[in-house]
Image (cartoon, helix red, strand yellow):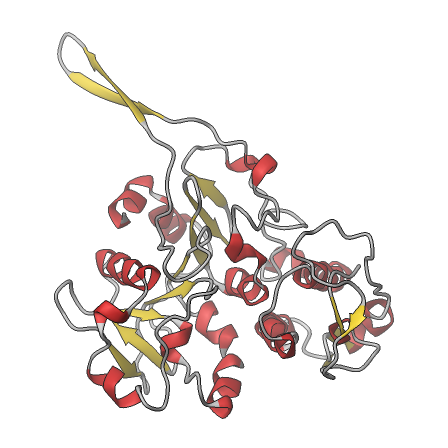
Length: 350
């Protein structure tokens, strides 16, 4: 499959023509999986001061608990991570990373201690750096859990051979997909995009390769591509194809930058969280990115002091039609933010 991506030319085009960076020389996350070569054992490494290109995996845990790093598996995983115990999505992501010629792959459940709250707090606060410094993020966009795999199906190509007086050649065709009718905020086709943590994983990554239900598609800081060629109508969110807070030209306008954050919060509020207590941690990476551009502002419970009066003008959308918006306008039973913060309630807000 990595060869297919190379033939499509998306990665090469991005590296040569875009301003997305190449991931060279960036520091590795605290812990990362060393995938080695095809027959090598995979193992967890403590990065120390190592710098190298690495790939991230964005995926749904779903109802299938993936293999996890815990205090009891910590030493074992540094020797070898058992291949047969890895879910299908992890195995395919490892194979893809190897095909790219990249040695390191970051997977949340294998890089963060899942039974150590202190470690989780430290590492979850580093999500900005993890995804921002990556070379590429592989997104299991059509997968509902770790057993779904990356490759869920693609539209069949049709090939026709032609003979000329001097040569023979093949023309391949495939159907155009009407993306806008199916894709915008549709958790049936794109379960991954309904997850709150995934919003910052997408927006902070320099480039994302989505494994969709019908085709591969590409999302980077500068462009969007799809296999069928109908990329102009790809809608991956409420506010367009990216609602990206990391586009520097957009952020040159201070008022627009303030508005962009509120757009982001609207979109984020639609999304699902397994743990309600993650409401602010799951957007903290995006806040860290925004802070780089709002150096004279303080970030307070999801709002900013340099636009505080406007940021306070939120309200619950009781007429929400989003199927995965949850209960709208209800205070969460466990306190997680002051009542003046949008983070204090569950569900979709404007």
